[in-house]
Length: 352
Length: 70
Image (cartoon, rainbow over all chains, first blue to last red; front, side, top):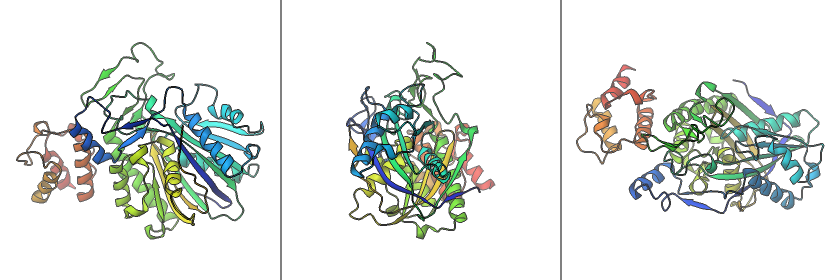
């Protein structure tokens, strides 16, 4: 197993922002029976999630998160050496939204800025990229932004996804920090599963056309066109509960850490049925597995940082915590990290 | 073995009448993606087997046969 370990890197702060608009899984979805809604909420653990208005993009949510960190942590934007924006809902097809954000955030033109197109594994990939950049020596501070407005990717009546996916945007400050605790990461890909979660049309393989925009109703309550998100829930479940669990186990064995030494397991917030199962298979008790999905749903690449900041902002003291993080999602793409969160700055989740 | 498996599925499908190994999925009142997920999960946790092709199976016996063949 290939694992990279970084020794002089620290996550200094994480902030999260969500839209004000709430979708209540029990009170909304008028075409679905109350009984079915209740059963779904019981299984997924998701009572509600946030939905942005047409004007609000993922970059706006991330920008607010970054500005919160700048002002509360007294960070001058000119000290940001790199901006990495992990998103699958960028502002434009081109240019990279990170370039737009470099200007909006008032960072120098010496800043490196680019987007990474990944979803639920994105925070781990972004973290690895940030660490590698800093390890190179020329870069001391990375602003890692993770955000998506997934509610714009699906038909709002598609039963497969409309109970799960919400909008959020986060910002993390990752610094060169001499003699910090080691930070280890492993990343994985299995492109044979690229169709498990896919928007089939609207790219360059199958450009948008009248036919791809046609809404089709499927036998399992799917309501979608080929330009909407298609998700094979059962396949995602199999992937998460076998392959992802196996990678986390191997990773923990390799870095020689037991479940007892872990303070927190921060999992991508797919749904509670899935995360509970992963935690159970790893023998990690429920009280070590914080959740943000109850009120924010599955928030793609934002879900791990959002869960961390939402959880730690409510703690009285910011003590040193050893955490295993794991993100997994479309690609298929997944990753695991071992991180010590020590005196990390986590403000309460903001709304716009 | 058979009895235990039957108990497992009765737990999941408590709102159904009279279940047996030969009950067809298509005869169930509630055979939706949530039930499929729960069934896969219970089989995985109790027998360590992830059923791969449930879409091509028609009754609980198909699943049971996979379990006893391992």
